[in-house]
Image (cartoon, rainbow, N blue to C red; front, side):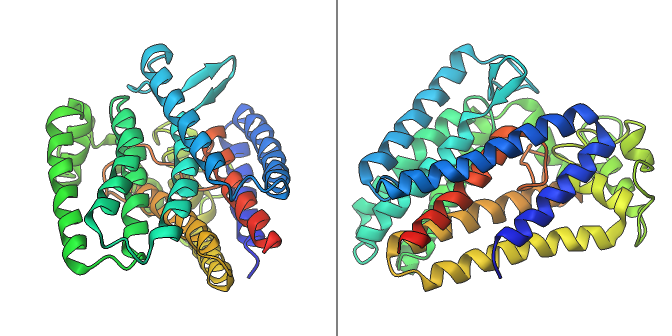
Length: 347
């Protein structure tokens, strides 16, 4: 299945839902959508010039992303308890989204050339160091959700690169140790509370658990067909927090029913399957690894976002691909799809 079809389904659902929530969000999202389409054209132009496959280009994107992450720590305003966005008038840009694209390109280059010798410990540590720089800068913002996506990217590449079982176990141990250090050093009190809230969902119903409880009410009260366009009580009356971003899946289900939720989930699954099928047909390891990186990013975003909505995971501000409002993530999504199709066409 062509991956543009599920992308279209997700984008259409996003625009419909945002029109119900806020006309200003809808207009801004249309602007970001137009920018995303332009980005696809830019990716094709870059590939025609032979740049997307070039190692120097991948490292340049990585360097720019790291520089922007550094800048955010000093000049970015505090928005939703983090310094994650660079503000340009009405537009907010989140540099960590560029870091996700950069890691996919860099890791695709790195692992495609070393997948037969990745069992050597030094290559594991080098790749971990490449990932650690943007992860640490992201944790300092602090943005736990994006840091998890970046670490997940690295681990996903390791898993498919023929890494021996002992190194996989060692990587998991290191990951647990890093989590423990992050818990005590990088995380703020409210972030620790959000994680603890997953295990104690009945506590502090008007505080840390308020958002998840309202999300569960929105989903649970929707029924099969939903309450109708603009009729979601939790969404329209302001009980559901961040209905355009973190909890847009809950808002969509409330107004359009569980059938709509199943369609959205199916669209995301078909998108990932389509990417994997295209990747398996690819002739070069670089293309295969790019497809892997896309699936890891889209899959983790989906799992964390929906897991947060139903209370299985902490609320850590990870958007639903192509569905949530937000320009930075929309540009990342279209950049990935555009880059992948550009690379495949040149094969």
